[in-house]
Every structure is written in structure tokens, then in C-alpha cells.
Image 1 (tube, each protein chain N blue to C red):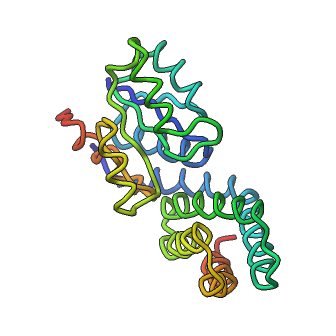
Image 2 (cartoon, rainbow over the protein chains, first blue to last red; image 1 turned 135 degrees about the vertical axis):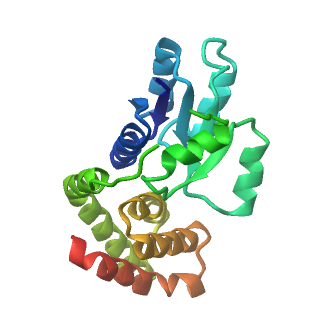
Length: 124
Length: 107
């Protein structure tokens, strides 16, 4: 069974994304409300992918991703950025950082799992 | 992967929406207060940044629950507050009112 870690400071985003991925794809979902907590959980649980918000209090998503890249226990896990920003300048900025993909909020709870699978090339 | 043939996801989304209503109401109140400050010409930097963060969150959250028009209004507010000018701030109160009106039947 696939497992995905969701890192987002917003309770309802975490809850809806987890519900969506569990119900539509049957994946095992882990959640974290901060980048630091996310790194801890990722290192311990080794999820197949991480879905991470951009704007979080304290350490934001791109900075958390930088910390992950320097941590051998989690650097291999693909990270998808989840952002409400749709301006071209932000997309270009994030595209150069090495994320596995960028998904946009608001997302459709019924198709989120398919979007993640498409980006990561998951066939199952 | 499955869709939602038995409406299970829709029902759970409705439950999450209901549980998060108090937070949503607080956020709409904050945007109203900030819009009033903008209208009176007394918008300070701390209030702008707080409302910018709130509008960003609403722009990302509301669409998940099917409130796409409201999400669009929140996104317009976010754009205004990111780089405010007297001309753009003048539209803020009307958009905040529109956001609340769009959600009125779901609050």
C-alpha cells in the first residue's frame, strides 16, 4: 500500500487531503502540521511521497524541502509542493528547486490522488 | 481509484466544513475589519499582513468545499493586499462583502 505524508499547517487542508487520498486511492496517510514535524515523521515512517504546503508559519515549504535535501534519511522521498499561488513567477521559482511536482490549491478531493499518481508516474 | 459513488466523501467534506465554520467566521470577520480600516485610510502594516495571510488561506481552502466563487474573491483580496495601492484598496470592502455574501447560505 502506498503511503503519503501531508505537511500543512491548515487543519482542514490536512483533513480533506487525507480523507480524499484514503477514500479514493486507499493509501495510508500520515500528517504533520509543520515542516520540522514533517521531517521527523518522514525519517521515521519513510512514506512513498510527501505533499507539502508552501506557506507555513515559521519554516515554509521550500525551506523545509532544503532541509530534507540535506538529510540522507529523507532526501530520496519525492516531494510535491501544494500551493495556492498560481502566478508564473512563483511557478518558475519553485520549478528550479527540485520538487517532484507542483499541485495547486484549491484541489478537487475526488481527483487529488489521480493528480499525484500522474505526477509521480504511479500506475497502481 | 474510485470516485464517490455513494457520496461518502461528500458527506465527510460536509462534516469537516461544519467543524471548521467557527474558524471561517472569525476569518471573515477579520477581513471585514481590515476592509473597514482600508476604507477609512487607517490600514496598518500588521493588519495588512494578517489579512493577507488569511485571504491566502481562504483562497486555498474554500474551493475544496466547492465554493469556487468565494475562493476567487479571496484570491482577489490576496492580490490586493500583496501590493496595495489606494486604487486597488478601494475595491477591497466590496470584494470582502461579496465573499461573505457568496458564503452566506453556508455559514
